[in-house]
Length: 166
Ligand code: SF4
Image (tube, rainbow, N blue to C red):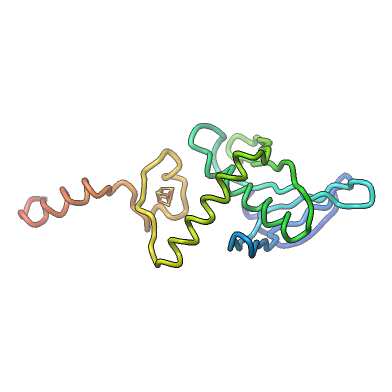
């Protein structure tokens, strides 16, 4: 499923143009990335973009980051194409379920705040400390991030090693 979303290209389906692996950016927010899928729906003489992000797993609690990622893509597309985008969708592969996300004022504000915070961290050469959440096990960074080793657990582990205990 994810492989399909990542095959670069453009095709028509039922009057909707579907563009995959589209590069998106916002100079205002300092964002740059790739959108899995952007659908373009006919709206009079114009084409209305509608981002769709593919995710493993199922919708549920702790999926705020998915909404924020999708909203960031919408903000990039709005800036690139000078259009307003009211909503997009997340497609969860395991559940084969499409969830509509409305880009309301609160989500937009939160996304912009996070983009700004990330920008500040990048400029300062910092990374945020890992925080183990339900989605960690399906995160592609899990092997490197090791969120199960919180500061407390890591300290206990190092202490044990220093004391020669297994
Ligand atoms: S594994 Fe790390 S990067 Fe991935 S969600 Fe968990 S804390 Fe975040």
